[in-house]
Image (cartoon, rainbow, N blue to C red; front, top):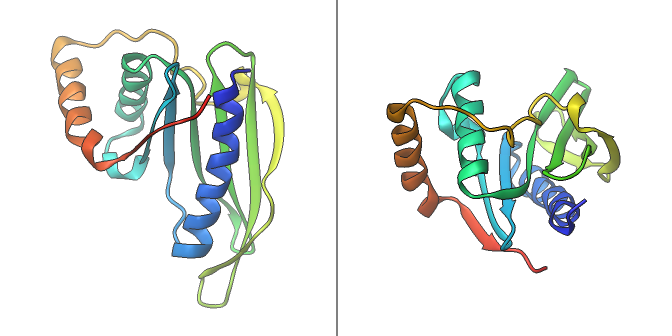
Length: 165
């Protein structure tokens, strides 16, 4: 497993803790890191796409940026009293993914008030429904151009940083 994947799991845990407890929000998040350590992170909900188009777009940016790993996270609600923040880190060269999960507690006003530590486990990558973003995709010229334009608009507005090796 690439060192960036391990670091991504640690950083995403902290990021979600800050968003949930500091700001009261738990967005669907996507982040990727390329071999040079460039990391991009954004909220998936901001895309406003259907699932198929969203997956094509995510695969497009993973491949265009030559990502070595990526992660996707969300809030999982089993019932009002059982809520979890979960994410998985997918490494290009590993058959296992890092899966992290923490239980979220809300107060009477539905505000997040506590979050357990994220438990980290390994799971076969093939069991993660969004693990196929490294697989080559074929896009029409119009679709590729549209994705390129959207990514160009998004890039200046999203979190971009360089991870230390």
